[in-house]
Amino acid sequence: MNSMPKAFQGDYIPSLLDKHQISVLAPYLQATQRSVLQLERGQHGSQQVGVSRIGGYPDLPAYIQWPCTKGGQYMTSLAQLNLSQIVSEVGEDRLPDYFPRQGMLYFFVGLDEPSYQIEHQILYMSEQDMGSLYYREPAGMTILEEDEEQPFQAYEVHAQGEIEFPNYGYLEYDALADHGVSEEQYLEWIEGLNNEPDDAIGKMFGYPVSQHGDDEIEAITSILTGKHTYEIQKRRAWLVDVLEGDEQKADQEIEDMLMLLEIESDDDIGYMWWDAGVIHFFIRKEDLLQLNFERTYCSVYSS
Image (cartoon, rainbow, N blue to C red; front, side):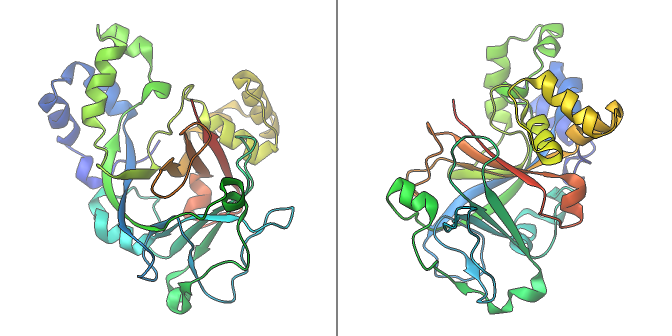
């Protein structure tokens, strides 16, 4: 899916797998690794303007209108991510090439019902436009605060760059069987390999938390066709049709779909995505490279 950051090239993955005694799966894991930025909850509060934050309210200039739902209600601000801060924390050699190096991303969402095609808005602000930021509350309660009957707590958030291997939903069981590895053994190994911080609150990129491993095709089908179905074959047929029968291009669109952000349920912040699930946002790699956030997809996964 992506070119590997410099820090993970060469002997990094073979050495990591040897350390964890998983070398038998080296070819499979080498081919399926993904770059991920793990997000860790930091200090409570919103005292420092312009830093990466999850929960609470965003730092916005006065001229930006607060995003609203089609019904006219204030969307809920979920996160703001200072991209320069992330670069500083993670290090250039651990960042994928498609990650924007400057500016701020803001994530707003409407009601998370149903769990797919959730109304949302992602705003991007360039570094040059970040001089007039201030902690800004909406004129009234936002839609998810009303639904949860509480405001959400603000926490600063920090990032670390890692690589991630297929989780339960994306696991290729034939690859395990070919090497005599059981599902239970693999998942035990991966828990040690996928280095999640103690206060993890979410991530950028990597593998979505998922049961069926079909999030990318769901996202791209919705973005390009506006339609939704749980039938994977029908999704693919719609996608190929909108791409004028070009199956190779359809496969490439699925391959290039990125999970821009995933946020976990968290009692301290107050987020609860259905039954303690996650909310995630997707974007085409081409659109991310062009800083075009007009075509994105938002959904909730909960077991």
